[in-house]
Length: 238
Image (cartoon, rainbow, N blue to C red; front, side, top):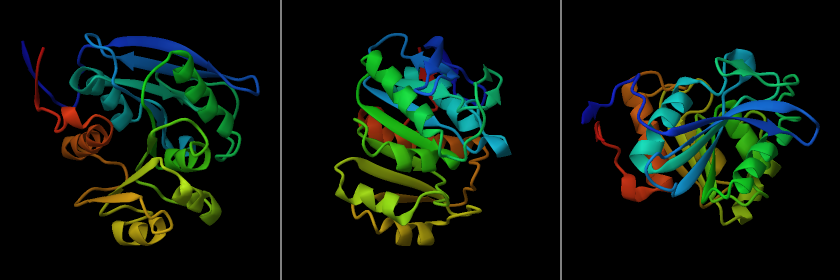
C-alpha cells in the first residue's frame, strides 16, 4: 500500500502515553512513539517552543515528527509538556519556570529514555526548547543537539561556550526570515562553538509553517541522526 505523505499523514508506529517524574516531584505528560517494525536506531527527545506563547508537545513540527519518523527513519520520538504546559495530550504539573526549573523536566526526559535503553539519544529543541537543550544537555550522555529557530535569548555566552569543548554535535537550523535570530547573526554567535553547524533555510520563518518547511526540518534531523534514511520519501510504501 502506497501512502502520499501530506500534512495530516500519520504512519504506523507504537504509541505510548507516559508520565515523566521530575526530581522535584512533578508529573509531566509525555508520549513515546516507536517504530512498529524495527528496533529504533536513534532517539529524539523533543523540547517544545515557549508555552506562554502557545508552544507545547503537540506543536506541528513535533507532532509530524512523531507521526512520520518512526516509520520513515526508524527513530524513537519522545515528546513531553514541560511543567505547567497543556496540550491536547493533557497538562503537566507545576508552573512555567522561565527555563530555570525546566532543567528538572529535561533531565527527567533523558532519564526516561535511559531506563528504556533507547539508543543514540539526541535532544531536539525548537525556539524556547533550544535554550533548554543548550543549557542542560551538555553534561548528559547524548550524541548531540539539534536546534530549530534558536533565539539565543536565555542562553548565556558562558553556557554556549561550554559546547566548544564538547565532542557532542551542535546543529542549528535557522530560518532565513526568523523573527529573532537570522542566519548571518547565528553564524556569528555560534562561532563560539567551532564545530557547530549552522544550516540556513531560505524562505522559512520561525514557526516553520507549511509542509515544505516541515519536511525540510525533518529531513535535516534525519540527515543528522540516521543518514541512511535521508532524504525522506514523499510516498510511504508500507
